Image 1: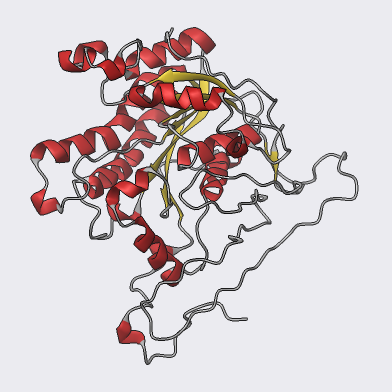
Image 2: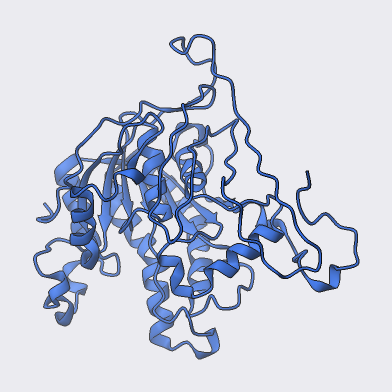
Length: 393
């Protein structure tokens, strides 16, 4: 059993399910982001999330743009206690392990919240050097605003495990890492050991989420990336998923689901997203297809990846120009709104549910449709063309 880390957050029971027909009462969850914004939880099938803040407008086009703030609401049924007429996302009785949560403002956290809102029990794997800060923040209530679920209760994290997915088993850990003070006090944190600890503690899981990525040379162009930097990006960002699935698959119940997170740089050029990270994401997507076949045949579990749009998370700041990427998406994506983390979380909840029982080996785009665009409409070459540039009132 991992010696570290029972979470101090044992506060409230999870919501029994996210429904496709029953609408929730609105609640506000504040994410600890560089600039706080209002975010509303939305029903998965019939409500779309639109940011309540006016997005930052880029100054790339000659024509002014106007964004329309729109909200769509679904009517609750007359008798909210009657049986649901539609298809619920009900993960009650399911257990999820989310690898890669170290704070409360990334996609991993949002996925955990959506799974919890649907009724799943949440286990978390946190990078060892960040473990103490993460658990302390949970215990002191610093994440309480971000833990609010649609019914007003707080997300409960049953247990937090120390995890460094760069190392498969103890034999792989170099001596300098074993003696590093950042790892002092934490035991059983390699992938194999964590899987064994989860089995010892809970027996099995149903959902495995890979929310891990790191490229030590991400700010360098590929031509200037060292071999070590390139291989480190591949190891932490793509092979780590292979390793997690290898050791966790035997304890994932048949019919279970695994989900990773990728990015459009896997297939399109994103200048500045360097250090081998684009190659790592491409490998992750290729591995998703192969693992879907192998894990599906051997373990009867599904393997998918979500290609998420840009988010102002702490991790995203490492590339140095996340604001510009978000501005570009705002102006060029078919849906001109800032992507929210909970939109990715809700898609993950769907993919993990029985409603997606025939979906595996897929790359699911959650990026306001930016992946569909072949050219940016903010380009000066289109200044004199009569093409739709924004939503007008």
